Length: 457
Ligand SMILES: *Cc1c(COP(=O)(O)O)cnc(C)c1O
Image (cartoon, rainbow, N blue to C red; front, side):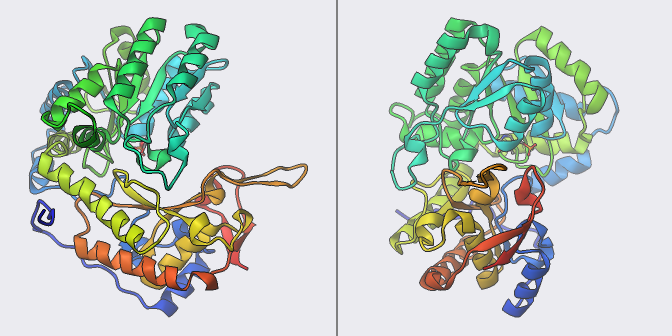
């Protein structure tokens, strides 16, 4: 098989900022050994997130100029609405400034104290918006999903037996909706099988409970279904996506992922009464229902992005570009979550740095080392983000996995950038025994990973 190449050529370029190791040491110390506090100009390859970091196509930029900025009933809205309707089949399309705004609107209507909202794995903003409403967010991942070295096709699936148990015990009185996140971001970007979505849909319908997709990476998920699920190979990603949406009653979406835009989101659904309630809230905080916090030009670029993201050449390249890095790292004996997910490479920091215990944050130590070695910015997803210290006993409770996520922005970096990333990781792996852990100097009580300050031990 020949190399899967980037299915685009480059029309506009932005120079990268090269820095020296002494400079990076200074920058990192000033940032309190927290990569969220490092200015982007001090980063060479930025793999902090794939959210809002995509490169837009020339057609999307053309749409930006063509945007209709009318307050009400803009042409750009009708194009956007038509695109989302054709993609999802949902009757009501409500634009929002990003995914979490759609979540906040949905859960402020359906959530509330005493309610339980299950998901394969809640993303952090989803969980936060559910909890702010007073409801409880419950994760139901599969056991396979929590085993980094186990190679299986659909590790992002929901635990169906656990869902059935929950619905039987709590019923529709306490469960106002069931969510499914595709792909499963909190579980290494692993895909969910169409068969699993179908069974959750049947279960929800038998209980009369609405079923919503958290559809941020619907196109990447559709590609995994096409290439891995029996009977799906001859189907187009659009057909598969259409079936995924048809199995649910609505979705929340962040355009900053598979919308291929830098800002934007939507809530789409079939229930007219629920849609009316959502629009009433939208007007108070986001904007009039035909723009929902976005400019007309954003809606144009978003509509175009939703078309481009389903192109087979794009998806083949996108999924291959992640697998390429995972396979190379695996061949070098570097511990990495397998198989490759759709949007990021996850290093297993506990196996990479077995001499650093969880309370000394091996993931943070590894992320900092990658920055010092090669100017690469990644994100710790381990005990800095999810670990807890009991306020009474002072006992430390580590996160289930110590990971470093290297999220790959869409259409931004080329294969040689990724080769450089692999070389940098390999160089750190060779010197891994020299790495030491960190301790926290100061941290806020909530979402501490964004602003905590550290000191190397
Ligand atoms: C990014 C993301 C969200 C939230 O979207 P924003 O546009 O960042 O507000 C929700 N769910 C998942 C799975 C995500 O990855």
